[in-house]
Amino acid sequence: MIKGVDGADGLWRESEGEGMRKMVRVVREWVSSLLAALQFLTRLPLPARMPDGPGVFRRSTVFFPLAGLAIGAVIAGVGALAELAFPYYASGAFALAAWVIVTGGLHLDGLMDTADGLFSNQPRERMLEIMKDSRSGAMGVIAAMLILLMKGALLAALFADAGRAHYTLLALIPVWSRAFVVLAIAGWPYARSVPGVGSLHRSAGVRHVIGACLLAASLSVPLFVWAGGFGMTETVGFLALYAALAYGTGAGLAAAVSRKLGGLTGDVYGAINEVLELVLLAVIVGMTGH
Image (cartoon, rainbow, N blue to C red; front, side, top):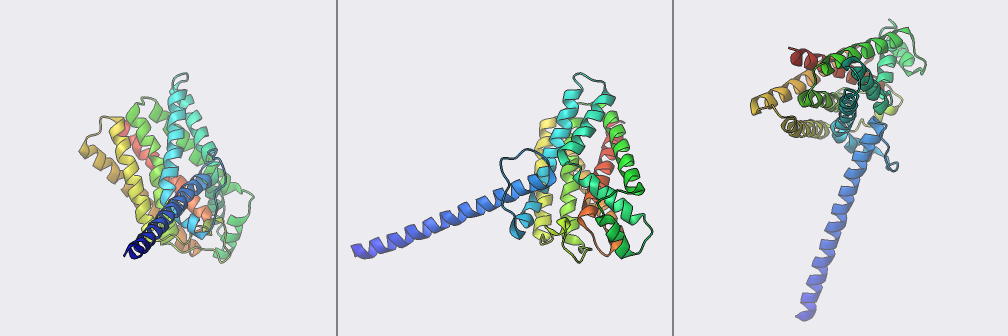
């Protein structure tokens, strides 16, 4: 009887140990995926390179909104600090510079390549070749200049009379633009036959889209509470606004580009993100300015 009990107890302990090891392994995988999202979407200094692979890249898409919040925090933080010593238009310029630097110009580069391809008036395959070329053409430079000019002007307008609520609304813009990027990855085919950087996350699916959306919402609500002045109705209203603008505008852009290219690419994801940020910023400035 004692031997039997000891044997059962040993099996139970072995099963418990295996369960703990499995839990630790799962936690490590998700932490690696979180760091992979931060390393891919930002230029924040991180301690080490994380292991890559299809599983890591697939899971990392869930954390795109969190990487967006890190970007938004840098932008809002730089703007708030600059306002302590500079006029609002200079604060807008500093915040814009931080926006480009913290992302490494990743999405801006995608915008330039996409503009060069889409506005080349060439057949589909030639458009894709132009987009793959690392050199920037006239349309890419023009698109980048226009985006930066409009973002800078809107940031200056936002900082003209900024409070905690304004900084909160600004910080959430990169959260929701990147939440839609996950849907763009999962919802439209990849346009290239040869894998590229944009294909690293292609195995993302519906659950990753839902996870990213829920994460974006769960990050937004505490920030609205922290900002103060937002009641339940306003919080729900702003959540609906961000989601509708990001997913509605993003879906329209993705569908239009996909019709031309037969799908999307990594450059297109970046271009869509840049346009969504501009749209969200313009709407926020328009609302808070009145």
